[in-house]
Image (cartoon, rainbow, N blue to C red; front, side, top):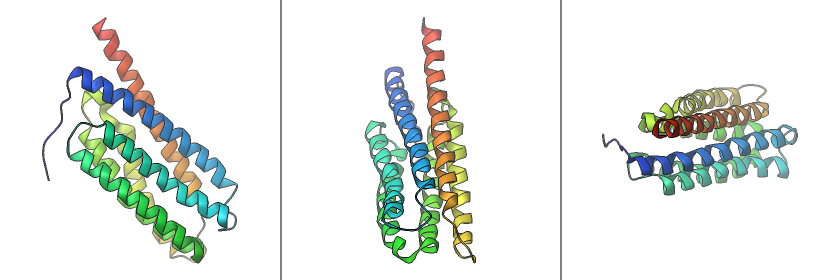
Length: 196
């Protein structure tokens, strides 16, 4: 694995920070909207619930693609490409699992959350420089995704699994993405103040 650490030039860092701010903010708002919609639509694993379940990892796949295109070369780009492909496959797998009911959906979603969370932690660690705001919300969010995904698989094997937890998962993810966007915005203002 490469040990290369990207140190962007000031203009490049500003562009990347602005791009990430927009991406994280949009991603956070979409996650919260999804959580609200899913909370009222998952009593039965019907066509509406399955559609929403498929949409969530697709949002992550599109976000990974946008992030990939906006990020300077480095190992995090390869991880983003991997995560985009993984999220697309997860969407397909969740669509298929929906026919089997709650437990298979929770198994697939949990497995995706584990791997995607690990990828998020990796990218956050690669971006921990001061130019991108240390990435604490991203690291916490990815770590929680990893841990929560494991618990979902345990729950899925239990007697009475429930999809209620997925609205909580999306809400938490949305909040952390928005916090990361706010941190990047604060960092941008701080750097502008220093240069004026």
